[in-house]
Length: 392
Image (cartoon, helix red, strand yellow):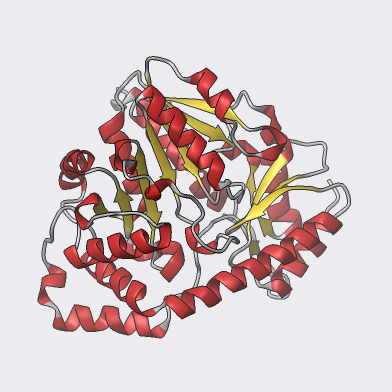
């Protein structure tokens, strides 16, 4: 007898990151030629010592850190986000328009749970962040690809042509995952106008906002006094403060939306990670200068990868930003096969473009994503050497 399986789950692609990790099984890397892992956009180092001490002190001295907390998150953290975001974006955000989630992925899931149901549609530019497409697939929501072409920047007019009576939202990630593209402020404003005109939501995921190369506010969406009728904003503390294992994210939206979000979060998690929330709050209050240095280091690595990939014969750098470089490779084989061969023959683990596009978009066969934030300049130089020496 076959075990029952939700057909939506069966139709959803396997986790690409987990699939890539399985490529390492049984592969031996010599000590003088270790694996270069540029597959995952997550810090591999522990948080700075001050933050770790703050977590330890909370664990020892704050008994409430071990109990259930408010479903929408620690009031002090919600207020801190509202205050800092209002200043950074030149807008007016209240603490009760902020919810804390178990990472930004959960923030996305919570937002979508309030927006769309089976048979509805959500427009997402391609190449897209695969976890977004996976969640929509699991819920029976149609992910409508918004093709971006070589610029990798979505066009408002093309998005408008995709809107139907079942469209519930447009999702934008900036700086983009997987491509790293930083969307212009005017473009985001135009998408907000489009969404407002059609009565749909604009969901903006700014997980990598702390590593944007531009100074000042990257957009003016929160400066609109009526931002909360259209905008849903998502954020992650994982990248800024290396809190990947503590799972802390944020969702900013209108009060009515958060009342519905609360239902989802109460059912799924009851409350966010208590120690993680205290860590995020301490980081926001104490690590501004440290985070600025982290940003400068990431921008330095971005410059190195732009120069290195541009010098590789046959390679085309399509975009770079935040943690990512997105490139077109010169080899006459599909990128999913190339990625597996690079593990065995070059000691490099990266992700193929096929993981970031629907099967109908053949461009992914020639594309790869390189997550470079965990590779220093020496490591990047070695990466370029190995890619340059690879013979398909």
